[in-house]
Length: 483
Image 1 (tube, rainbow, N blue to C red):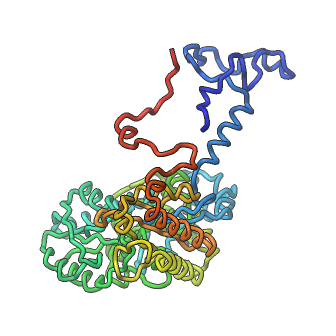
Image 2: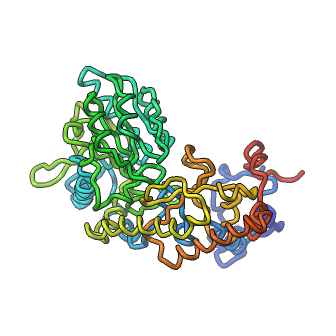
Image 3: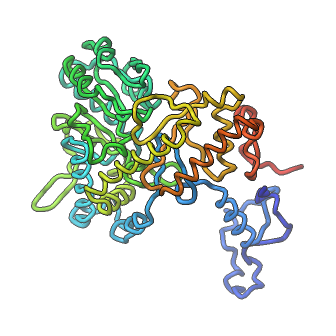
């Protein structure tokens, strides 16, 4: 257990010499800050040395789980390794040192890179135009729905509803609501898939679009997607595809060829760039040709043998992010694309799908598999078998910490009771997958033979099982000095 930095205090200890007695006496004679900026009311503020601070925060950093240090099998979130070479490329002075307001003729290399990424994403998606501006997948999703509203509005038919599968990400209905639509749920069948007949029954002339993730959030390919898309188009509606799971499609299937009109990518998932606590995301949006005028401004266009920004787009929905989005993330994604090449991105898909199905094959006798259809890049197990011995999904997740693994996504999607959604990604080797499988098998054995061991987990971590209800209702978020 690591004490708080406030609890490591020693009166009079300092991390720097401001007394004027050290080797920097001449410079230390003057206070390092204007006296008006100094406070004298910091009761209990820690008095520690530089080494105390260094060691404290280094120890804390070692408690973090990350894709760089541990297997991180979060389903639907694609927590793959972020290659160090991507960081080196993004740190090149020509990229890291430019200003977003620099004249276009002084940053032609950056514009060429952005244009190249747009072209790659058009090719991968089978669509015609891309904006790199949205700062995350959810914002890309909102951008796409706002474009759909603008497109329908320009056709004199704004419409009022969007169809959303019951297995969808929670951001889908949120984006629909923020864009002024009512969300209508499309129930999945007992295989976890949408049926064209069900969608057709819900379609009318008030439906603006169908939002669909494919493969869906259950890790299953929507087998009737082409027929569904035709039915949606028949009533003048559009198909929005959430591209969060493109890790299962690259080089194998193009959403534009299966009927998608709008698609958001998650560069921070599919193309190995940091996300979550690791950095800002990027959620580019791809569209078919007749929706291109609605993309956010500015757009990159050719001009006098070079490239420039074009903000004169009267049909555009406007800006959705400052400047042109998270440029450094786009640079990282491009480095990944170049490193893989077209054949390599296809191999990414093949390996990601193989890894998920390998874990499924190793664990399907010990854990209930939610659906019978072959998994794509992720597989959903449940706690149905372990529940017979009083062990729940949360217990399994906690016990994995004792084996050194971060838990997979749990209790999601909501349509699966006791879900454990595992996504190994393509970056994990066979030894890691086997070690994870062995841990899961051991936990299954414990659940049968010594269930209390699992219910009390974790026991090998700095903090053991917490009262999560009390923590959520009465959180202690700040340190207060004792009287």
